[in-house]
Image (cartoon, rainbow, N blue to C red; front, side, top):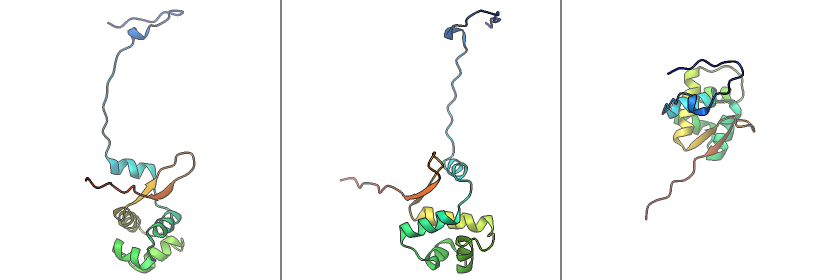
Length: 117
């Protein structure tokens, strides 16, 4: 069914094969790909939105206070596992990390779900 394309020959859209592919990506992978790394500024902004203190975040993440403080102040590199724990704690409190969209990555609270009447 394949036709060779000759120089100067115009191909019709009907000559092109139709390929259909449905991809249902894992939401977590998309989120991790969108914001590959939680930045200290994201963490501080998320805490501000939640009105959380550093000790509250440390408790929610299951980490020591010094880990949260050092991460937010960029004093030292904390482990990737600690950063993931911080991210999970904030996300479970309804913080949403926004991917780069031309204006830069950011943080917001998830939209409140309406209760059915």
